[in-house]
Image 1 (cartoon, rainbow over the protein chains, first blue to last red):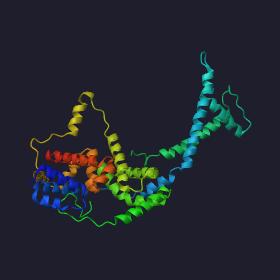
Image 2 (cartoon, each protein chain N blue to C red):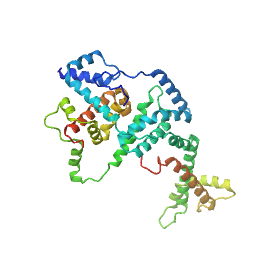
Image 3 (cartoon, chains in turn cyan, orange):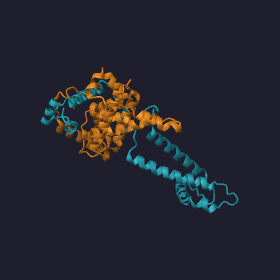
Length: 170
Length: 212
């Protein structure tokens, strides 16, 4: 039996170089029963792990189907843009339809949505000669636009966030 | 485990001949093509790696359906992050790293449970550190005690997943220490320490006869 320091060095060496066994290791193993037994335990552990049952399955088709369903970079950018517009429009919708109760400062409600209002003016102008006065609640075109955007985003986000398979936790 | 490769064993089994440079070049070509958006090239990488990944995940998670889902998720995440992958490095440890993180996250979420506040710490201590035998058993005595590999498998199942992972990667998937370090996202020294601790913990479970 050799000293512990030598044994530690040899075990470290064997752990590091698994494909080639240096002669120093061979010589040590011939004289050290402890290290031989550690080696036997390692071999046993390797056999035990190798004999563990494993599933045989081909996941490549499922992976490729999910990759094909992934939105492209441009689609992701468009989604982000649409999401931004939706948020602005929602803020506008909420703030302009807020009941102006006593003591509520309307300038706050309109102030936070100024950008949204301008954007909505531009967007609704594309749909027709609809002009929304800043102080009024948004008209039907705006509401329709918001609903259409919401449906589009929901459909796209559902694809991105879909779980691995049938809602199983992964 | 591949026949003929018993690392750390005493039979000095010859390592299988590998055509490493050519394989690495072919793999690099596929990775580069996939990085350019060629999903067919990535499909070939999936074909090459799905078997070892699934094998590793099955052994780690111990549930076939979850292993398949995790394997899919591993590949999908690899595809999404492929642009950041350094093609000069081997792909396997990187894939094992993604798989290990996903599996450990899954197992951690599954193990969440309510524990009474007063006794929580005591329960935790008992689970993570089984009683050590009064006199440390020699490797020879331990080998005499082990009747069959089923005993080791049972002990492996009782081992914490964070300890099981390095053992499965090193002994089961035959990663080198360097590859193990990459798969665990730690330094090579830290990987060796983790492997050593996991092995020691496994031996403790076998010594206390607590594996069944």
